[in-house]
Length: 116
Image (cartoon, rainbow, N blue to C red; front, side, top):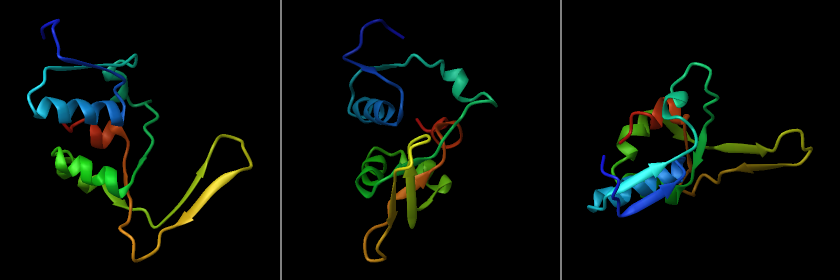
């Protein structure tokens, strides 16, 4: 890889990697940097958590060609409860049947590690 890039993205999470794929797809020379060693994401002891993907994000991932690669690891979110550590507070939501269901995709270790 050359040291010259048109776009340098700091952060290799779901947003940074999606932005990198989208921009590279239109011809920009892109580099994504992250403090986490990519090999650590594939290690057996990696704590790969699920990502809730809203309808709009699902459409973006589809538009940049990533959704077909992760779709088999995703399922509709019909109910979700979000908590933060030991806090007694949480968010609970049940998705209305008439609304497009957000999706849940497995961790970057399983689903996103092979997407490019």
